[in-house]
Length: 390
Ligand code: SF4
Image (tube, rainbow, N blue to C red; front, side):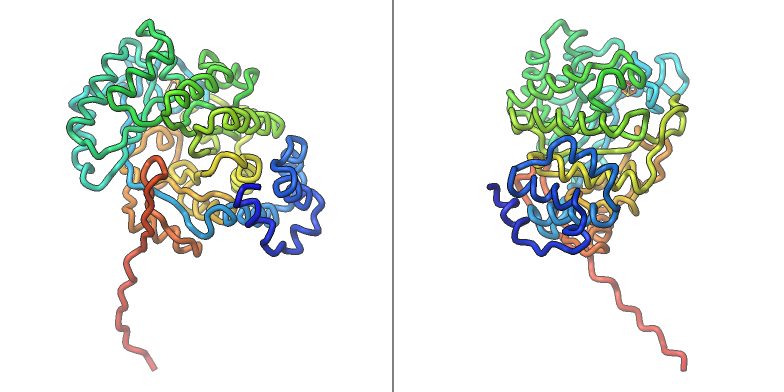
């Protein structure tokens, strides 16, 4: 039994959980059988009360990490919004002749990092599928960035960008990743998983990599010891069953490779996109997805509250229902903001600490690969003397 399961088995169980047959069964499966099966996963989504579900997810989170919540100091820099595909949920991409289309040169890219370079230790970079960039462009991008800012971890490229780059460069995915790693790529974000069910992908992102290709690309990265994250875009046209299929596929690959660090679920934001039939997620649904993910993904250690997408308020609530990690200082973000996110981009690490402490959790600054940790604190609130009016 992994230690966290033992911890979980020793925790007092509130009556709201012990009196609910689905939650009781989920707890039994986790503690005694090791994992929650797919049919219980569906029941958790469909037939449990909201607060007891959140509580159980929080117990599992606390059995692993106590009250600690992780964040890092990072910066998002999107390399280009020009894309040869046109996923229906995407508000970010532009055609190459569009007046707002851009493609950062290597110099422009490093200029974007420069003002933040002393505060951050990670740059997170994804972009569209540029029609002419090949691997040489990215090799120069990463090696120049590493030369200028050796302390900055480069987390870059979604699975579909890697596939596109491999095709354009006449290389296998493995060769592509090996060369990029040698030039400075440190890890891969999880974007582009959407829902790992091909009939859904065909309707929301035709032309993108298949479910199996997404998993294979991450597997190749894991074989090269490149850590990756994984994601789920929900609230489009998928069913609960599709969500559970998605989580199960990620869980199966993690059993094989152990290379996923963090799972990042985020709801579809509809502004400027082309998916009118989407069944948009409510706040209840968003928090429920995060809670069920914590319960189903027993082998992926971290579950992220992606505040760039769900906002700071819901992001805080997620920390009480299964999430143990919250998106970092960020500085600049285009993909979610093109689709309607209004989350502030100017958070300092002190703001993040405060956000975490406000829900009675302990902020822990981490590095990109979760190997260095530092307990943080927001600065003490200044006491102001206000004369009492009597
Ligand atoms: S989601 Fe990615 S691949 Fe799809 S259109 Fe947008 S930028 Fe292109």
